[in-house]
Length: 453
Ligand SMILES: *Cc1c(COP(=O)(O)O)cnc(C)c1O
Image (cartoon, rainbow, N blue to C red; front, side):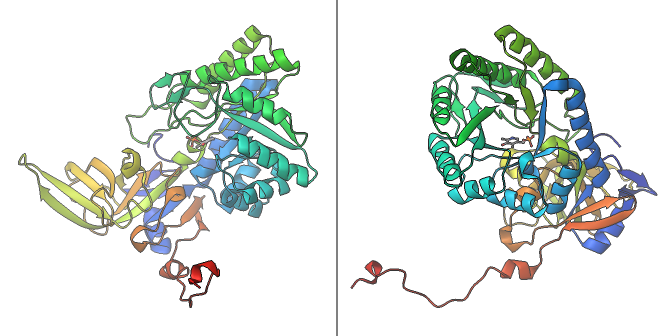
């Protein structure tokens, strides 16, 4: 099997196995749809990224922060902790998961462009290593809350380097029209730095940027690192001291289909390292501690989604051809990426091998929405039939984490498989979970003004 599938994926007597478990056994025990995590695949990706990072950056090694938003659960947070890497959370909810996993606070960074006071308090109380600040109001808020708790909080400035990266190319402009970060070009970044240094309860320890997702070349990372380093050099010139940390964010791409050709971790890290070392030397800076924040690259390829086919329907097209619509028992509620950004996936019949001729199919979900498409066009064996299991690889990132209950469909759980054993790490929802939030309550009067008296 190629790199689109988790390491342990293999076919035995025609049937797909992951972690030594057959898909038939997984589906029989846990139902479908279900996310299946290849635990050793995930752990080996953590090891690979942290090992390569350490060996390439040497003394300048900062942190590999796993971006929790790609997918987080208590068990996954424990795997991240055991793997010795750090954790990037961006809401109180993600922080709550980290807390439940007893993830060490000093290895957590807190992101978000609109953290509530409660979220900031929770982060400071949990003694997170750094809070990445994203507005002037937030700088004041974090300073006030830290001061109230008699604490000095490390903060990192989220900068907008004016580099926006897409899969294959990037745009470098001065003014980028996005909600994230303080623009370097407009001077907003410098103003934020000055504002932050005025607070005794804050310590600015470095700068950060995140320029996009599913990126296939290191150039955009290098371009933004150069802009951040120049900002750090200005700090040195005006303040004397040096900012210790440079965080270049996440966004490293993975293969969803055979068309995708992602960068190997080592190649990516080595190229970016050379640029950072050269630019630091040129600017007369000590090489900073460099950190990165991969989400998708760590968890994406480690999970697959298992669906069961419910119906197939032949639809005649205007041009005289026909398309087979294959409906599975999930769809946009467990994978919104196709509808949201036209993401491409591949899929296979998982419970058997077929020698039937392939034909063009559209893999669709069960939701009341024409755009409820998992894969727009895919060749599948023409004998595909109700009852078949379909496996979609590379669904670990932004699948379960973006899942919804649209149409009151319970969200699928996550089963972790390894060495022929399986265990639930997130259970599938049931209809009682869906009903648990519905309340019958008698109305109460909220204030006197609205009573009309
Ligand atoms: C989303 C995000 C990441 C992770 O992005 P991937 O594409 O999953 O690697 C890292 N850092 C920040 C600030 C993000 O918003």
